[in-house]
Length: 198
Length: 371
Image 1: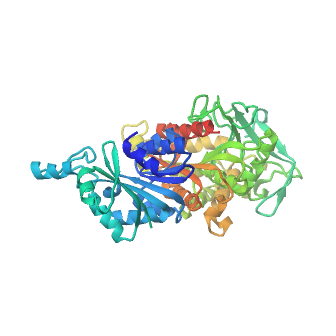
Image 2: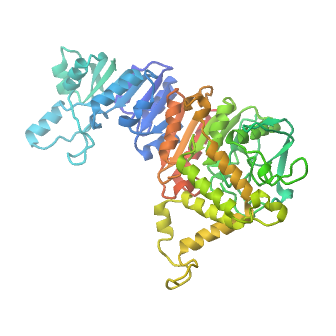
């Protein structure tokens, strides 16, 4: 399992109720279910991935986060997880509001466009960056609203969203992001992980 | 129509008060079982059949000598694996495969016809509930069915919230739509317009409203398929001829196909039963039973739901299935949902649709492992 999921799993206490939005093949769900006794649900847009989840015995709903989160009542989950998908929505602000309505807390991870490799790629090569966390070409990327760790940090603050914990991930190392080290983390982390609450 | 010798029957002694206000008692429920009930009695699956189905789910139906209606799905090593599960299915009341219906005789030994009480989906499941007592099953492992079978699934878990661990409604609705009522009415009008129908008293005259029933079946059959499926299978292909005949014989293969479907249906189905069962479907509105709030139907159950729809099903479209998912999510119920890609229309649940069969099998087997 990728390191990102390990970090997310560490943020969630045992026996909680969790919704994984864009749960893909259910790897994180399965881990949470098996290791932390989490009452876990998934929402996934791809029929193929939904089938993979069912084959793992996971409860998953085929659907689109931009349309289908509204059916869940307020605060019906302890945590709502959104892994590296926020930038792919037509309206990420609306999705973020929905995550925080449905979950008591939300865990959002974002591929960092401020990562030095991304910056160097554009600066030196002059072409759209392609990295491990941003593997697609400009013409086929699902990402519509790329942002940096700094952008997201400022964005949630401006919306009066409380940040409980923010972590910068670079390969296997995770470290705390603070107001004071934001510039550095924004340069050296390829992924940001935020535990937030409204 | 009924070959009594091959039909297992449970006589329900207990009076059952019907939604129409009448009470029935000492009435037969015809059923069939597949696989075997284990010693813990925790492997039973109650299957509910659709409008024209019956208790003979799989294998050769001993009355019609044709394959059972869910042969692709139910059997050894199949999606509903009878090596593992004990499958029970019964003919709905109002039906014509041995359960109490309009072709039965009233206490005065006169065939009911349209004097049979109008029944509802609720009455059907209340009648079938008696099978649990009969087999000494405290809690079913699963209940499932497509189309009208799915309606019974929803009504059953609403009436008996603790009686099944898992619940699988397929290609169904919680409330029959105007379009579906319209198609059913078309079928009923075709039957009652047949001069042989005779206000439902045809059996005593030994003549059937076969033409009307065949037309009803033809119209309904179109609704079970998709435009794309029909086009691919038949297109404008001609039936055993080189060119158009400039007449009203079946020039096109699709005409011939529908006529065939109509004619074989008449041999196995009772016209009055068709009236009664379509009426029960039309009356089905689960939300209405809970003051317009569908969630109310599921508030008392902790069962695990899995809802399945099909992309090309325009009779019970995905949105109507999703409405059930939404009602369940809004009360935090355990619900999974998948829409299966298929161009086989509403009939997809009866056919060899691998994604459907594997989803159903995986859901059942994984849930059973967790048992």
